[in-house]
Each structure stands twice: as structure tokens, then as C-alpha cells.
Image (cartoon, rainbow, N blue to C red):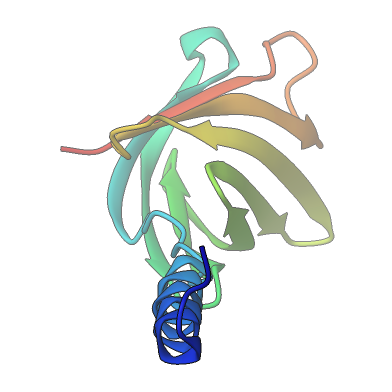
Length: 125
């Protein structure tokens, strides 16, 4: 059975419109806001304020033990990377954001208390 050419053209147009709506790239979850963190087996804790741009770049501050440090990083999917500058030293945080976006967990690398762990967790309401 042969279909008239206008039926084929219509079906092709519907398919093309459907495909164009499928090609949108999902936006990463947003981590902007206030977070309470704990690390190193509970040895250290504090809070941080993060701001996330539409391209996934993150900036903010991390507060703990009376010290405030600048942080920067990015988010790709549910994976968050943060860099904390502490004078000439730094810490790298490799974190995973929970599906509901309310918790980040992972590890830190860099200058740290060698007697404490490397675990890190941050939560928000």
C-alpha cells in the first residue's frame, strides 16, 4: 500500500519536531544555598554558602573553627568538585549530590589533619 506524499511529509515533520524537543540538555541540580558540613570522622564542622551559575560553575565561602575560606568548583550531573583555598594550601573535595539534592558526600584531598579521616558530608534543609 502506498501512502500519499503529503502523509509522508506530515509524519516526517512530526518526527522532526519530536526529536528537537528530545535534544534539550537537562540542567544540573542547583547547589546554591547554605550547607552544614562535617568531615574527618566528625573532627571538623562548619557551614558553607554556595552560589551556582547556569553553566555549573560554583563559588562561595566555607566557614569552620573561626576561619572563612573561599571555595570554587563545578557540578556535572550529580558530581560536585570544590576547591578550598587556605593561603598557600588547598583542599580538593570530590562529592556526590544525593538524588533529592539535600546532601553531598565524598572525600577531601590536600592539606589536612593526618590523624583525622578524609570523609566529608554536607546537608541542607
